[in-house]
Length: 155
Image 1: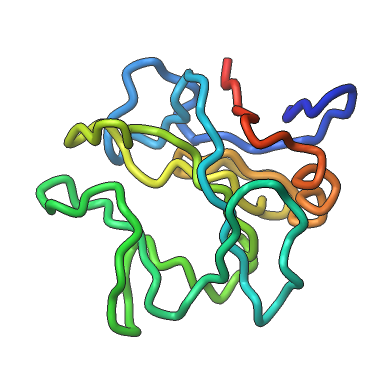
Image 2: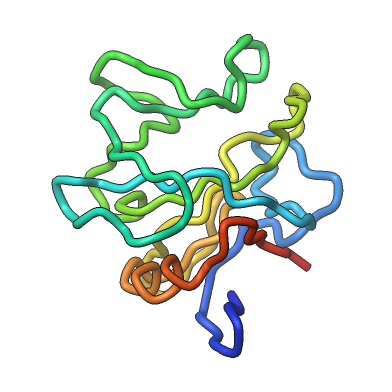
């Protein structure tokens, strides 16, 4: 469950559960206190979310670098349209809203995991690749309530 104040929202976590020794590709959600960095959204599907966090519309060329050998590892990158593992523009609705969580980004350490997002959940809340997922509709209830210094605590 994701708890915001007294409210609780169902969520999905990584297929490998919660781990303290998070590694790239392990399917685990890191046990950590994660700052909320930015909110990304699909402007062609949703109105701009109301939040105190920085907000940016997802562009067709937006992707997240999950290649540990790349100098851009665990960063937002631009790619030409086409296939990419962490392309932010998806045909499904999982990435209609994404909150970038501050994991392995200060500093970035190779192979410690990338792209830990808070994003939309699949029907039935099936496991993620390591992210936290809730119903897209719940973001409209949660994001306006979060303070500028809000964090996500994963236990």
